[in-house]
Structures are given as C-alpha cells and as structure tokens.
Image 1 (spheres, rainbow, N blue to C red):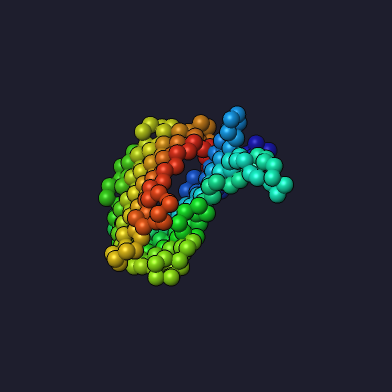
Image 2: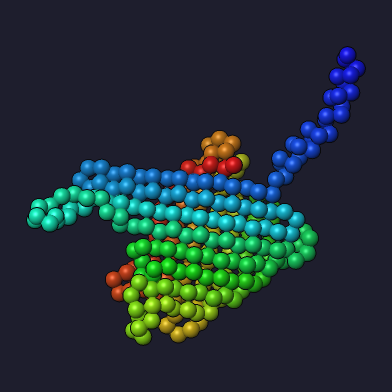
Length: 260
C-alpha cells in the first residue's frame, strides 16, 4: 500500500508543480480601488472615488485598461416653490475616465515597442461634455532593474472635445490632430512600498485648439498580501476652457486597493 501511495505521489507531483507554475506566471492582473469621505457639521458632503485596473503581459504583448470614477455631493440651501428654504444634497463634481493601451515589443526581450492608446473622459462640471483621443506610435523601455523601470512613448493622434456650449464659430465639437507623449516611472522603495509617476501630454498644434497635460503621482503601501493603501495626487491642465472655469484642476485621494 505504501509503495502504491509513493508511486501516486510521484505521478501527481509534476501536475501540482505545473499548476503552481501557471498560477505564478498568469499573464492577467487586476485590482479594484475604493475611497470615500463623509463630512458633517456646518457643511455636509460626501466624496466617492473608485477604480478598476486590468493588466495583461505575455511574450511581446503588454496591455492595460484603467477605469476611474469620482462623485461628490454637497449639502446646499435651496428655495422651494412655496418660498421656504431647505437643505438638499446636490452633485457638485462628477467625473469618469477610461484609458486603454497596448504595447507590442518589436523584438523578443527588446526595449523598443509600438503602441496604441485610446482614452475617454466625461466630466460633468468642466467646459467639455466629453473628451476623447486615440494615438499610436513608438516607445521604449529606457531602463529596467529589480527596483525601477521607465517607459516613454510618443506618436501622432487625433482628439475630439465635445463642448457644453458652442464656441465663437458656433461649433459644438473641437477636433484636432495631436502629438501625444507619455512617460511612466515605477520604483519599489522597499518590499512594501511602491512609487509611480505618470506624465501625459496631448499637444494640439492647430491654432486655438485645446491641449491637455496630466501628471499623476502615487505611493502604494502593502497592508496584507492582497490589500494596499494608496495615496495619489493628480494635476489636470487644459489650455483652452470657458472663462468661468479653471485651466488647472488637482485631486488628492487616499484609497484602498484590492488585488486579485
């Protein structure tokens, strides 16, 4: 009986090892983040930030899909039809974005790649009903070590801004060719802490067209194996906005990230 058990164990060992190896080398990674802030007292408000990230890396392919949403509700005093006043929660900020990019490394284990990028943003309280763009071009992994990496790419693209109000020419859309440049720097500060810096520029050479620039800095701290705490700071800049809107907007957030 013992001999049979030993033979069965030996036969099963390769399958167990292969299963473990496939688990460790899965090309798919996903994470979800969530953060909320509720304020009471003289002013009542609630903020909600959530996001989903999907990554795929296998052989010469690297793909990512990122979705983020931000909603803010603030209590304000409103006048009713009968002339009385009451407090009511109103949405004062609402924004969601989706960004997808796929890289194909030109040579196996090489540093140069070609990319395709698409993005869409809906910001309820900005000058635009929505903003979208596509781009393709060349990129390179400039360096990679056990602790840090730097990717940067550049290429031509096309951008469309859907305006909330017609411009001086009576148009409700602003279409323009763009030059898009991106850089992503990652660094493991230690076993539990990672820093990321993303820079994105979408420059529209056409006279009077809106160009956009974005910088996102984040620090992620591992709490347990699948749960992290993330601090992020985002700067968004549009060169051409309505007179009552700001060109630059910032966002500071602290969220919990669950990886699966």
